[in-house]
Image (tube, rainbow, N blue to C red):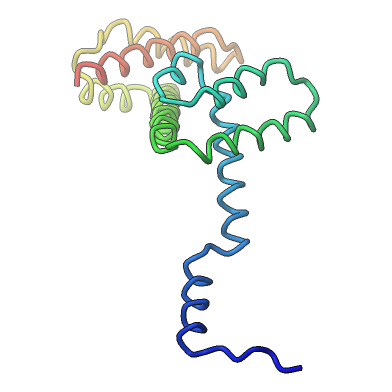
Length: 181
């Protein structure tokens, strides 16, 4: 029994159709990305989610999440939400998540900057104090100087109170300077 002969035109059409369809691996990667997006979506506050134009089915799935306690059931539920998201425009959600991630990175960078200034002020003293005053001239020099001295004393004694006060003061100053910019 001979297989039916294919014309070259039919063979080209089938090959073009195969190339236009995504591979099974690609489909699986996309679905896993949607599941990850569903998990991230559930971490967002409801107020931010309401700004997105989600379908009724997606809202029902999101609302059902609160009653699910079992981890295996929760995994299946993420897949359900991912299926709902596959029918949605996820660009606004991805933009919202990217914005939140950028804000978290900026806050973390601000914390690290304050921590570096505190460490330098405690270790280097007047030299670092001069640099900080040069960078932020609106700082109350006298208050900062007394906080640094107290932090240096408490650090030598192994007490955390004054270094914490210095940290809070530096954070307030740097945040105020950032908001004025």
